[in-house]
View 1 (cartoon, rainbow, N blue to C red):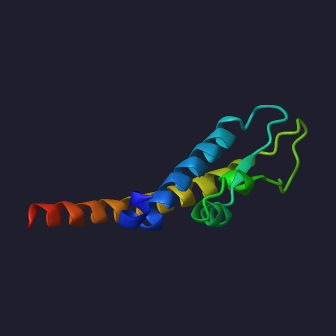
View 2 (tube, one colour):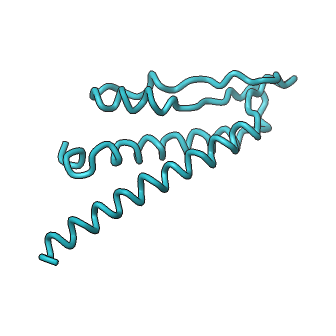
Length: 112
């Protein structure tokens, strides 16, 4: 893939971080939904699978709650919010790297 040669793992990482962010946001949005099962993406496992050209579906796991709720919902807001914040920070880091790389390539193409 051409983007992997130009951007390394950061392009794949950005895509996986985006996927994880949507999953965590879905967990937060469904915190009051009876029987909703919180899911998360094991980022390291997903990155390994993506590097080998495999589907990242095997890296999706159901979260095991510390304390069960009476309605069967496994979302724990503190856990989800912490995971979301950490993932957002990692997403911004990957994005900043890619923006720097694109800036370098742009300047090289312009002959600066």
